[in-house]
Length: 189
Image 1 (tube, rainbow, N blue to C red):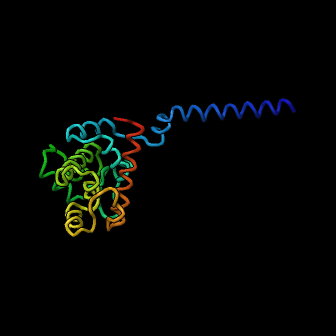
Image 2 (cartoon, rainbow, N blue to C red):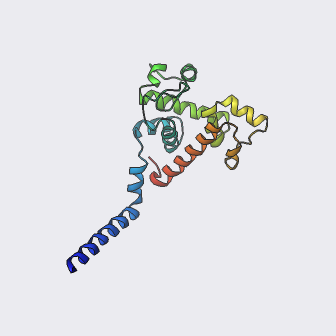
Image 3 (tube, one colour):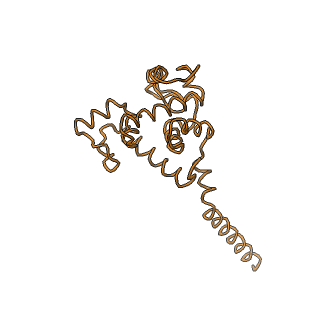
């Protein structure tokens, strides 16, 4: 009987120690729950386009969960889920060497490079406003400009619930959630 009680106390103590270690080393646990793949490619492009690499990681997490060959129901492709027409437009605007539209749907370098360029371009179009830029990444810049001009949405984080497209509303909320999570866990890449 005493052995059984000691054994239960020992197991309880081990469980408490394990839980204590997990809470003390929450960054370790956080990095296991919220991993970031393709860190070198993300860092390289974030630096090139003067973006926070954790923002790019958050967009990737929401867009494809780091799946290189992801294809959406609407036809967006690759790790950053870029529409082929948008990819073709980006390729005309920037210097991307030998990258093709097809590469965007299968190669991390291509998808992250074009996606990062596009995030930078949206930041430029929306005067560096993160929330508006994220909405534009999902719904398109023309649509977001229309919402702003017609006072459908004021572009503020506090009024994300006013975004008329449920998909875009949810998208912006999720990217901001992961961005903040990554900032808490990783501080930087």
